[in-house]
Image (cartoon, rainbow, N blue to C red; front, top):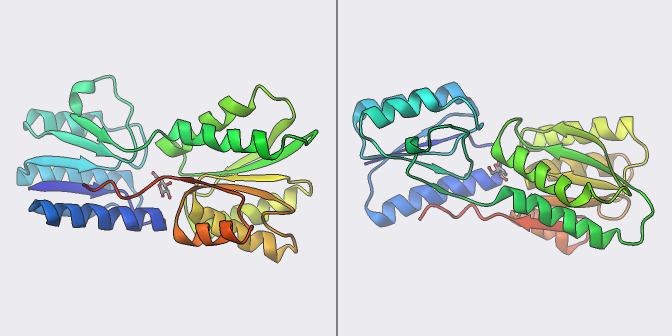
Length: 248
Ligand code: AHR
């Protein structure tokens, strides 16, 4: 039996990931005890404790943030239950608390976004960037932001004017973009940490009378169908793909 704690249902990526895990378990004949923590670390910790109490064979979870897992993972280790992390990582001094990780290299995703802008804006003399990041202290928020800066920091034409967190949610992406547009009238680029927030941000950009993809260059992450459709019509300029299909 596999106990799996999902962190939430915040994006189309996450919905695809939930389905991928459930389908993969079915295909493999693995009995799945599934819990969704609705974006709350306390609920994930509670779910992991319940898996330990049920004495499942393996625990897997996608950690909402990186810090604060040592105690509960120590309890799993004491109980002799191996723990895998998926999608996001944790920070721990004790690597023996985990048996493995399945997921992407978020820092490289951020670098890819930066490299795209180096090409796209090759002729620009100055580039004003705003960033809508994901959940504060989560791996994709930290690493995508770090990879992006790693590539662009060496080129002083690129200025990140403001960075705000939209928690990976479409509604917050829209709110964040409304605020950014109210505070800055010279935005050249939006770097958004996921497609859901980007879709919300595009609504805000259009409501402000601007043309997404033209007046503001848009770089986004994930590759959900709605974003690919907007890429095709030029409202998004770059989508960095991260597949949610990691269940198997
Ligand atoms: O951890 C992966 C990120 O979480 C995805 O990019 C985002 O859409 C999701 O909410």
